[in-house]
Image 1: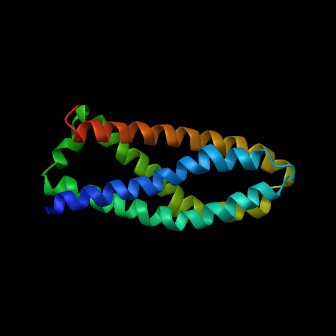
Image 2: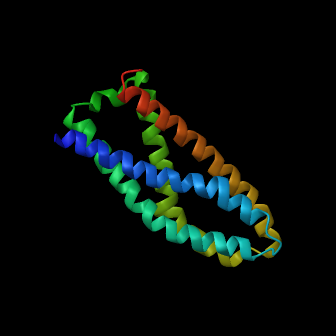
Length: 156
């Protein structure tokens, strides 16, 4: 089997784990926690869950970057990054950058400081903002995935 095919398999599996987790958090977990009665517990539960998911997400985003870079390099595709017609590639890289900032900077360094400082009343205001941001990132991720799949099958 060609290394390019192995890289694509790794890339797709890692994206499924990473974005699948984001979809579950966005569409199931945050709405469930927003509906809880207690004011401060939902944010603490979310932070604990997100902390554990972050380990998996960090690994899969790193593998996504490595396999994606390998595919571009092995096909001499670096020049494609600068072509406007390759919008799906720009979307993939942009989503990856946003998630990497969240996973490697905000989650380990900023969020732990916030958890202890958010009052029960404040957690009610934080959840809608977090939910909105997750929805935007999920929509962007789905668009990038759709573009990547379409391009891989010759539709773009």
